Image (cartoon, rainbow, N blue to C red; front, side, top):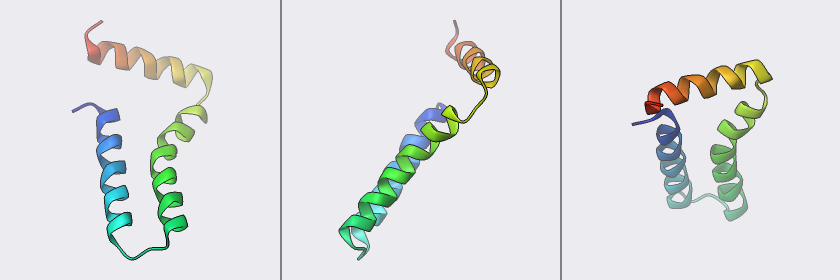
Length: 64
């Protein structure tokens, strides 16, 4: 499984747990959005050279 796929699975698990547990609806949505948005925010916090390195590594893993 790709690293990005692991984030999606983790976010889905968090979302299911939050909506099953007796948590107020607004708080449940905020936790879900936070779990989905954390990897995106982390990517945009990288320096441009770090993003380029990450793209190169991903291309090698894909096989291109």
